[in-house]
Amino acid sequence: MNAIHGRVKRIRSLNGVSQVEVKTDLGDLYTVVLSAPHHAAFVEEGRRVECVVKESSIILMKEKTPCINTFVGVVKSVERGSVLSLVKLTCAGLELKVMLLTKQLDALGISEGEQVYVFVPPLQVALEAIHE
Figure 1 (cartoon, rainbow, N blue to C red):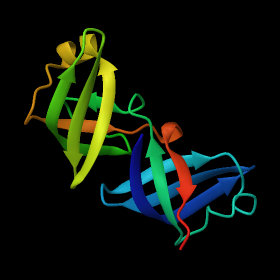
Figure 2: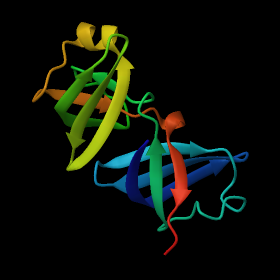
Figure 3: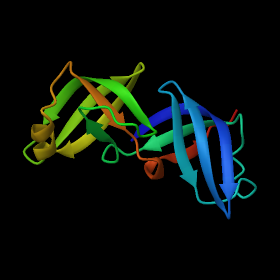
């Protein structure tokens, strides 16, 4: 799992669904919480949280897109397997791990030292409270 620390910047809620904007070292990271803020005490503006993202949920791209939750990264290493490969990269000083099919790795032509774009789908970000 990838853990990205941040602080809740803004919350927009409607009908029990909240869009949460978290300020992190990567930049603003958006996620969704399926409960209203008064039902999820950890979802409050100013609160420190950890954004947790599975290695298999992150999408790597060679070209920039206008999507939210897209950040620039540099590939540090590639552990190539016969079916799955693990890419370790650095984004804004944070190390992230991305698991993808080796076929995807080949199609993208990703190699060490290369700049890539990292897309973190908002629905794949889980929030955990950090107790202060």
